[in-house]
Length: 416
Image (tube, rainbow, N blue to C red; front, side):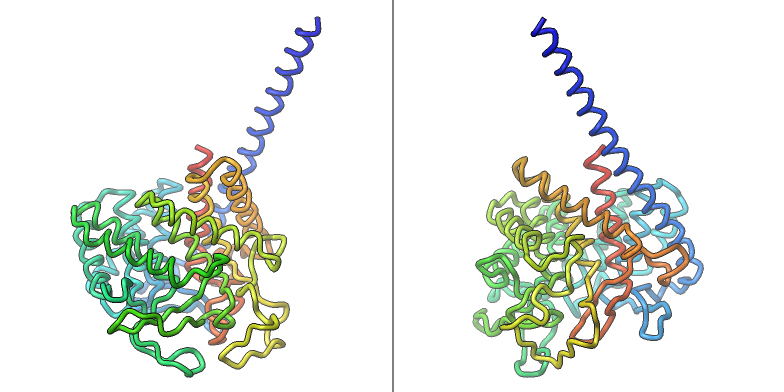
């Protein structure tokens, strides 16, 4: 009798667990579907106004109108990337046609050697297009894009130069060979080029850049510097500073997000445990930080206004109150955490996945997701481009939408 009762209790618990998981999965599916429904409404409207293929939607201008940028801007690839993600979710030929059209508009960028962001520009557009359609015409364009990126690689510094020589924010130093944490995001293009060409020089440069970044950008507590400037003649570190963050020793939220994402990709492509440890360390720093709000959408910098953090630019603490959040950092981090969850032990996988879902839920709320027809037809509100430059503060940003859709697609794939 006791054995029979225990058996029935086990069956009841198992059934409850099954239906509980099923309800949880269905809730997430509804969340994903709802967001893509809003996305379709917004981007249908965007396509009605964004008709010039030389002008790429980026965000909102200071006068509140839709801000466009030219082909040389680092954000140009996100708009076609968004359209590819819409096609990936819906399978609708309409989205494929528009994605192909906008992707083709970037073709000349394959020869762009003026900055490091060709990975953002070409892999998010042509790379997604190739992944989804296997269009062979995209391959040589991606290979040439990787060749152009390699023009900025220095074996002496062991890094890809991000920006050309320029003054630091505030002007106290000159950066001769500046490398920013964002540059980790361009390595995926190089890994891809090695795989399709069999030429390991791309992969070797990507690995060396990741190793150098791990050594010089990542602090012992796994926070990160935004800019490290090297001596181009010797490869020695000259300066560790901020450009879009609050101060040289602070942790700029989106920079931390780029690091989590970039080192996760580096581990995926190499299976080098050092990169996994760095990705996890940076993720844990982000998630466990005492200043991370309960909704897990970070302040634009984790240390803004704190004692011991002195900016090189004129900071007015009363200019924006409350302290602006950065929805783009949450979108990037949520996407990165969902991939990272696949490479770690069960306990960490659960932590990272739950944190990612919490971020997605927050970004889906009225505090961050725009009502259809508003926000210049972007999905997410309240991102921060560059606070020190007073540019794109509390603004929509095209890359926030891009990584938000990517996170939703990654969550869907984990469920499937």
